[in-house]
Length: 358
Image (cartoon, rainbow, N blue to C red; front, side):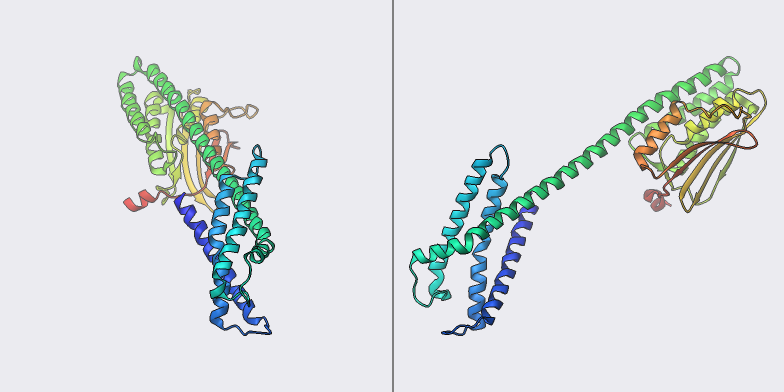
């Protein structure tokens, strides 16, 4: 608030100083029959006359800010602005009358009544022009404030939605992981023990990243490895994982828990339903259009059945829309030789903290 006030005062002072210089230049170029003005005289007349407007303009701007002409107090605001205008006219008349012996505006000492009439003609409309400019600045500032508030509310709404989506996916993931452990604990206790250890690592990583909406790809891949270790302990030889991550992408930023739901979707609907061994490919690469991530399975599903989108994939689509708007791609593609590939394209942004640490 104080900075805005100082800006207004500085702008008013600069404006009327420039106006005074222009007036002084005009006085020097005017022809007088009885006198020739020096540069000093012209500067005194032009600048002092203009500088007398500085307190007037500031006062009028304060009146506009305090009593803007708008409903529901329209009549009162107009009346106060009219009184302020009359006060400015009177102030200007008194100041010019008092300073005339030094400025020499009049060839002979004038009567105050004549100076007051001249002030009405010269300053009444100019005072209302100040009031108009004040209203323009006031309404422009209000529009700017409303825009900032709308942007802040939108940002808070996006944060709330992202937090809600994160709160939704964490229990969903935990429920599925516990189901996998429950399926294994009686059949293979050692594998179930390894799965519990992996689940603990997953939960620890999830809690560490709860307050952020983007993490380095290296961290996301580490979390995915923990999850796939759980699934490999459950499925055994029925699941093999192959990694194809292009170098130089460790510090690329991605939403947390982005790849795990994609891998879960592929395992649940394409690999776990088969007796034969299945393969899962995790790929990451960059191109001119951004960062690409893909999870591919070799499940021989029916071509007529559309790829399934459960809670995890719906959650990913919502989060990507909130984080990146239209600058992203999420697609499930049927592969010609069987299987499905989930592909995600994101803007390629780097984690500055990871680069500094490196």
